Amino acid sequence: MSDIELAEVESFALDHTKVKAPYVRKIGVEHGPKGDAISNYDIRLVQPNHGEIPTAGLHTIEHTMAGLLRTRIDGLIDFSPFGCRTGFHMILWGEPTPEVVAAAIKSSLEDIAEKVTWEDVPGTEAVSCGNYRDHSLHSAREWAKVVLEQGISLDAFDRSKLA
Image (tube, rainbow, N blue to C red):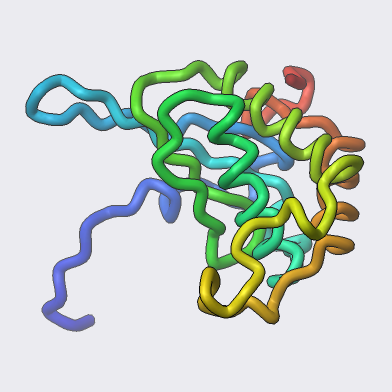
């Protein structure tokens, strides 16, 4: 082992073999020096180690959700995909409840599944995206439908508490 010191990362301590996606999980809340709260959520759409959203679909979900969520929940800072392509980190000002976050995710996925057109997807040109050719609204729609059919749980380990 090398002499490099690494901090513990909460998501790597999570037992990915025990979670039951799709779910919304509050990872934690950080408080700044002036008392400001920043909440971090695990928005898991696909069961870890059993599947993943193809990059083009994930990319389109990311771009579309970034805009949709800002109209549905206050304080959104960032909505970023996991490298494993099973979901997203959602970073927000304040301390919204998992129920509020799940409702915003669900209604956004409903729009992606049924209403969003290609013209609605932001950042699909070279001037606005670093990999604008890697998008698929078809894939985003199909994955949104899969997640909605399964339901979004409010508990990462118990599918009986659906939003």
